[in-house]
View 1 (cartoon, rainbow, N blue to C red):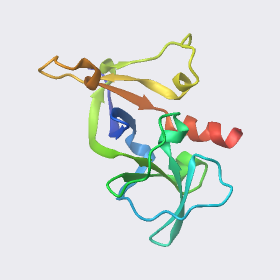
View 2 (view 1 turned 90 degrees about the vertical axis):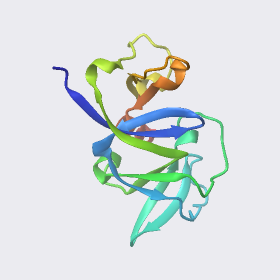
View 3 (view 1 turned 45 degrees about the horizontal axis):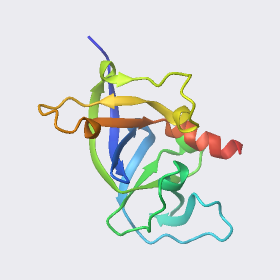
Length: 156
């Protein structure tokens, strides 16, 4: 029997993405973000989350997706401090769909020969099974390696 992976599925710019469930500490509704002067473009600012200052990163900017205004119906996925080198970090996403378990047999790895910088941050592509094959693109979920994304930022 194939082993399973627990993921948090979320949406960004109309596409489906996922990250490992053990990296997510909590999911919160959008709250006002205080901008930080001269911060890198991917840092939207900070929030006070129950007495803890949490850095908020714009995942659209990190992944090179089109910039969008922050909206009140978006969500913040707060990561466990271990995922961000001990810092409190949250990422802005358009919506959080679900927490699901997927079989490792439903994950396709991206080959090392893939020539995109983005590919180095992708653990794999998850193929979701559905009864209808009307829109196969929407049945694919890009599984992000958030620890690697954040580690790469720190090393720059």
